[in-house]
Amino acid sequence: MSDPLPTTGPFLRVFVYGTLKCGYNNHASLCHGYASRSTGVVRGRVFDRPEGCPTLFIPMEDVLAPGGADLAADCRLPENALPPLDTNAALTPPPTPWRHVAGEIFTFHDGPDRLRRLDILEDFYPGEPSEYCRVVLPVRTSHGSVPCWAYISPHSARFQAEYSEST
Image 1 (tube, rainbow, N blue to C red):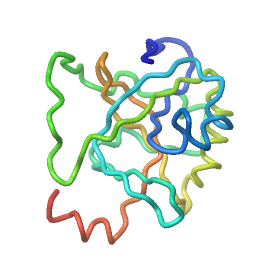
Image 2: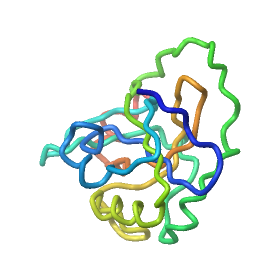
Image 3: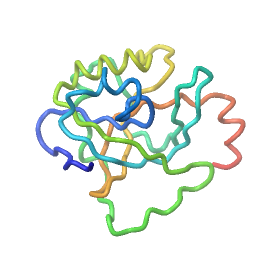
Image 4: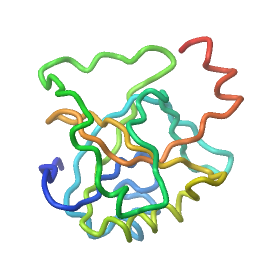
């Protein structure tokens, strides 16, 4: 299942943890035609929204870059933003309240168009109130850490009240 991740050329890399994963309801319409697929893990917590969709909370210090309105610019990931990862090191549990969240990494060659369609699904509107935020996160893979776009939940007052004493 782990295809090698492309390292050159224009591409879009997205980490998905919910309805965009293979076999789930939004995969066929929005993730078909991917160039590669692999697995990865991020630090975070997944909760179900009232309408049943999952949402990912992450430590804000894990955000490498926020998403913006210039989709072409956003498709140029900060490839050198991550320190090298010791692939022989054990995957240690993250500090409370965080957990390991497993997901899939999809790489696409139609970046700006694909990103536009994903933003619509995730109700992400740069600079405006949105259901989700699009950010670049470090995603740990069996080959090291790679930066990927992901859709996360904005931290709510309720999340902060319930989990701030643990962070």
